[in-house]
Image 1 (spheres, rainbow, N blue to C red):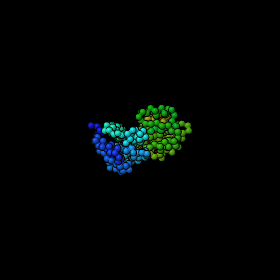
Image 2: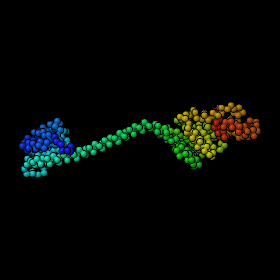
Image 3: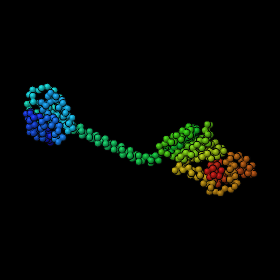
Image 4: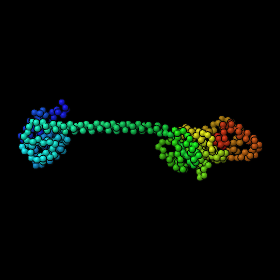
Length: 369
């Protein structure tokens, strides 16, 4: 037997013979029937009875049937409950009797008619319940989706610091021409993000907008017109977290290299850079641990502090860092030009420098000049 074919709770409103006859037939059909004298009494009894169907005597609805229906519809316990009009008129009085009701029972009353009305009500209730069941299932799925979204959001918020900490490093280029950009583009695809900046102000603004600090470095081409590399590096020297700056200078431009080093450059590379030298410098700059400024340039001079330098070596290093020509150095040291070349080559081998610029970089990092 279908769940909707079982006995239903029925409330019959009315005290006349028509209401009594309908109530009797409903009982014969096996339904649980309660009788209320008026719509007011029915609204008071409804919370306790909780009827599935309500039969209303049509005489109560005349001449203000709509007001009775409205009163019953507004009763909290009867909201959504089917209302059936019971007409005691033998001839159909017109459609106005059933206005506002879900169905109508016409006199004379027959058991088959009552059973047919209840069958139609069961069908409506079945459709309504199925619709409610679908809506309930949809609400469950919606809640599940909402909960899943909340879990995902909570997981994202928990993992956000870790996600940000593993973000790709950023290499910014200031005043760099196409030749430098091509060399930077040769870095591994998964190595770093590349950004072009027009000024130190734009760079600092973009850096502040980063949601979480990430490893980065700045490449400045000091050979380009309109770029004051020394001023730019000095302005960025106090940036927090520490910003490694790599400066590009013309080959042999020792004086500019020294100025850039003293301004706070992390490294100085001669143009055109040797194969992979710029990429290696960027990789080393991005590996500065914990953005620690104190351990950046000082580590460069480790080799210089490991080897004791003679006074003659220190003097040669100072004159080289001052940008003196070989003839001027030879004159000030009172030695031959060949001796200057030999002593500088020995000093470079001792400190592990391949070029004069590297020699100056090591010397500045060690505080020797």
